[in-house]
Amino acid sequence: MKKLCLLLVAEMQRLGAKVIYCSFRKIVFSTQRHSLHLAKSFVNSLLIEINQKQIFASLQLGLIHFSSVLLWIDSSNHAYVYASDDEKKNGRVEAKFGLANKIQGEIKNKFIIMIAGFVGMLWNKRKEINEEDLNDNPRLLSQISLKILKEEIVDSLFRLTTKLILLRPKLEEMAKENFCLDIPLEFVNCICRVLSVNLALEEVVDNLKSQLLLIIYKDGIISTNKNNWIPPTCVILENIFCQKCSQNGDLDVSNDFVKGGEKQGKEANTNNLPFLCPHCGSEYPLSLIEEMLVERVSRMQTSFALQDWQCVSCKKIGANFLHRHCECSNKFEYTLKPEELIRNLEMVKRVAIKHKLENWNMLLNMLLDAFNKKNLLNIFIFIFR
Image (cartoon, rainbow, N blue to C red):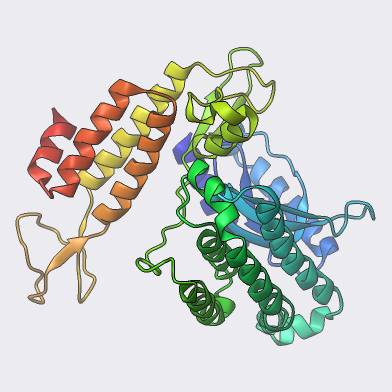
């Protein structure tokens, strides 16, 4: 199935689509057309061409919806504006950001409203532009988004950050419950992470983040690690089969922290709510989730153990693992950084702790100890034993 997905992505890109995200259940792609009429024509011809290929005969492809503006980080963090001939649906903004799950209540609503407002204002400006102008100046949308950020978002963001700093004592309880050290800091990091997805805004957002952090630091509470924030990693288990409704679905087990904390209240420190099927709402067996987490970590281990080495200077891939230096006399480095693997293992460990998967938690601790001590020999023995 994975090979078939890769072939489908390659075929779509050959036909002119720009694939943004692909899983066993969903493909997000850009038609690179500036009007809904042209986009529909392109998608129809694309589907006809793919359906004529015998290799894709087993696939059932269908259109879900069009978007005129899309802000995409991953399947759990995105916002878009509906594009439709129906006036009720056209222009409606949908936003979903799992990275902000540590922020709760009215603060998260403000976060969603600010991002949705940014995307909505970009859509309104986009309607005023002629298609010929976009073709003549491909950077026009980037210039408009930069103008919206400076004129509409920056002032609101400064005011809201100042209010959060004043409310910090009341937010401490919320921070403890959601494993967040500081709500104002988390808010600033999250919103700057989302806005920096647009490469045209990256430099401006970096400067904005530095100024916001300076305001937070003047409060005198935070003193270290201001630039060491790492966005929360989504642990998405794909293609989970439900025995009751016979449907396949994707499950983000990292998002389950907040759902359990909101619905259980005083029981938030106990075992979290069960993992539920997105289609029928029935409970997935905990043993199934644990098995899929084991497979996920096993694949990460194997990928790390079998990865290529790359020269730090000429970027050439090493052909011999026994050589420590490239032909240009520079050192080789990992293509998959140990820090990335440790960050993913830590996220899976949080799932194991929250749901009391004691045996699985013990194995994760062994792996993390081996990586933290940089004892790679123990890691390889653990993988291939």
